[in-house]
Image (cartoon, rainbow, N blue to C red; front, side, top):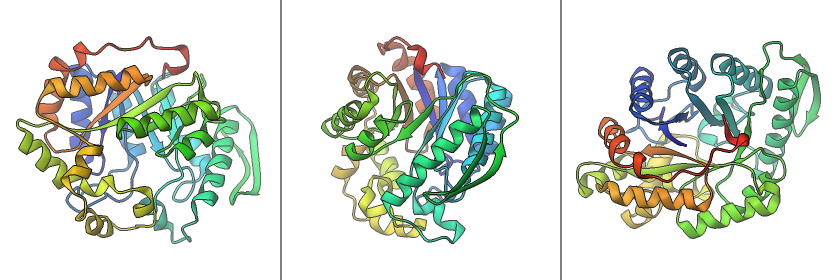
Amino acid sequence: MIGFHASHEQFAPASLLALARRAVDSGFDAVMCSDHFHPWSRRQGQSGQAWAWAGALLGQVPVSLGMVTCPSGRYHPAVVAQAVATLEQFAPTLVWLAVGSGEALNEAITGQPWPSKDIRNARLRASAQVIRRLWAGEKVSVDGEAGVQVREARLYSRPATPIPLLGAALTPETAHWLGGWADGLITTSMPMEDLGAVVRAFEAGGGAGKPMYLQVKLSYARSYDAALAGAREQWRQNVLSAEQSEQLSQPEAYEQLGQQVSDERLTERVIVSHDPGVHREALQGYLDMGFQRLYLHNVNLEQERFIDDFATRVLPALQLPPLSTSSQA
């Protein structure tokens, strides 16, 4: 399955809705979207509310839809459970959720201290348990487990079918930890050697046989120079390592560090080419690695050209794996 990634940081909500509709109408099988409060840079300049937007999309077209969110910090896990279950009412069997430990860029707006990674992971696991229990119809009370508080919460508008709850990982360590309890993995494109390490760690940690989704970062335009310039202008601050960025709470801080990112570093993390054949080859490599779904994010602003050209010149040539029962959403 090949999906379109809708970037709330780069496009106003109404424009992004039109782009997602164009992608689905053109032959993309699915949609995923980001869930941010701030963009990574002021050049990106947007930050639409993902849950409101998702409801608008599913109200127009019943398409497979998912997002990665942090179920603690600016959200409470019970509210996340309620929001996803509501979306599932619009598109039964088509909704999925992935959870991650979050970024200060979004979660620090609450004014609470930004915790260390180990504390955030503990909160993530506890929050995921709350979400699953609520979806199952339990009355849930949690008294401070890993900092998560829930009092007599019960979800009445529940999903009719189980919703896949994936885990988001960028490192082998996190992927290994997720393998034992998440329903699947979502990660982002990176050098193949690094990506292979993430996949192997997930499988070794208990994730063997579980679905794996990949968010592919690419830059496609009418010329290589335009593709590189678009990636540089919109996305170079996004290829910082977690160690560099996890404490940053403002777009300006990302911009400052992003100035140090070379084109070489950028093209290690983003597939930059004006040639559809280059993109076809790269995407097929990810599918051959075992990813059941690819969500394509053209990081520059030329979305219409990307959607139209990929729908006719890239997607039809890809050899997709069989869609397993565990990855129907």
